Length: 103
Image (cartoon, rainbow, N blue to C red; front, side):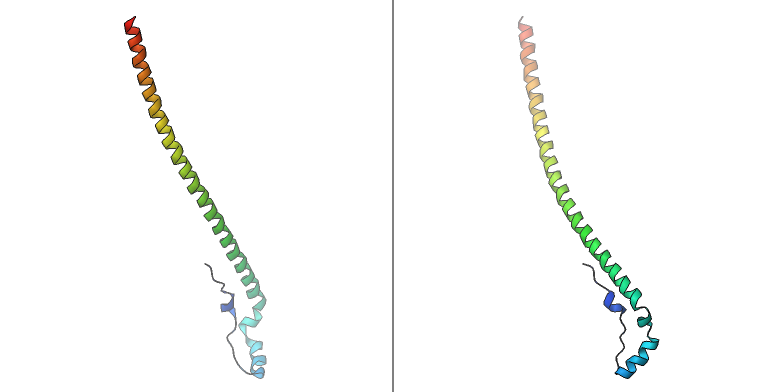
């Protein structure tokens, strides 16, 4: 889970109203407030995009897992079919060979 780091970009100054007015003149955060807010919004959008992509990846992984199970079942069915086909042709060949020998 991602964390919103926007709150770490805030000024930590504490003081009286008079101190605040003096502080705002020199506060580096005050001069960058708009940029920091914009970056906070961009960061939030990126976090939302990452969460959405993670959901998509999880959904795709479930689909892949389901398909792998189906492919495995098909492979086993084909092996079984192949074995029966081989057995069928072996028996048929013996029958035909005996039939032709008896003529």
